Image (cartoon, rainbow over all chains, first blue to last red; front, side):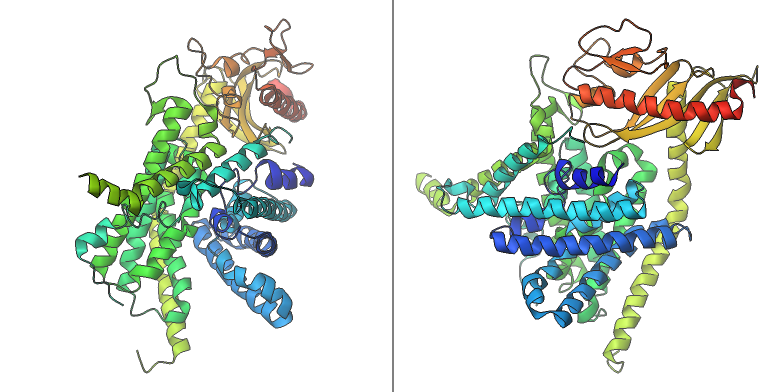
Length: 190
Length: 209
Length: 202
């Protein structure tokens, strides 16, 4: 598959959030303001990119040659958790403003299924190194896109007369259903 | 901080009042992803409960040993270990289930429900209480997954647990087994639960009776 | 415990946990590995059996376009068919198809879609079509005996008239076309491998 197709497929057609349900927790929790959605999206994309690189190297240079693929999940999640910590410390040292925008979202990312999902999917699909990197970027872009659209709708929803029992999580799910339906319109474009 | 609830309440609370999905919105990723059929929901629920129980057992046993600073790292290693055990078990003994759940079994590692229970409960309570808490939460999780799976399977494929129950006259609502159907069904279920739990309605009910 | 410094304790406990985890997993790996390998082998055997005519054994051979499986009968060393995997994009994601070809590389002996994530109820008819009660497997079944040269062609809303045509699925033209495109592509690859190998005579 060409790089463009991988990117487009991960970002739009098979959007991580709306068709694979990966990263739903922050999708529901953080998507209340467009500004924080943008920051969260950027933080996730950044971590995804590094995760794609590092987990690919670990899988193909350590797990497979030493025949310890059974340690795949343990090593992936440990690496992701440590990466997130490192990135957080690095950003705090390097740039205060960047830390203020991205920093608070970083600890949440460890248990974001989109990150581990990314690592698992690129192993499952036998992606080459460059393909994994492009896949990571596409998945991050797709996550950011879904989060921003959702946040935009929820800002409007605050002014809408939502029925009492649907307020909160219920209406978020219904809106997400509508979005997923809309994104299905892209199917067949790859 | 030891809990003072009776053992029975410890067990019951996860099933409805503090249901991980309906009340706390935890573990939404598998809840939505695998419930296109009741079978898949049940298998996912059982696998998650297994991981929850075994991690709770281990973590509540080791709780005084694990230093506070590295507890999360310790927890995720333990959780990932049991997820691998469950994943390999399904692949070895139930290959068809393993194939249909695919990467969503390893994703149990990052199911916030599991890490959440370890952090909030098993790290602070004894083995017995932790196991009861996990069992209740696990049953609550299975309950939601199976209900979602049944609704989506009936409307989307006209069957329950793979057995056709609706005749030829029924045109399946394709959307129910597709991603949008997952979101819509869960949204409506949460609204129903809100309605059921509404305190003002409870007052009415009492007034009537 | 309390006399130890905090960092020693942290390292000690984490090491203990990882060693424990490694031990559990190593043990579990030895128990489950043969079973998983066995299931994989069985699934492969079943798929090859589905796409090739009756045979007694098959041998596998690595080529630059993936493994090919050459089936033979005990009574003769002439192959009865060649099976191989074909992969490519479907409507929504990757399709993996097991393909069987006659040893002359002229006709398909069968196909089986092993993995797909097409639209349920439409694109999934490339595997099975529950709406067709009499013949739910009509789509994959019609490939048996179809000629592969010059290439496979999908016809819409009509019965095939040429020997290289197959009927498309109504409402899932892209999925149907994806199947034939993937087949055409990989068949061309395998043909070159087969000719350079000396063909059916070898």
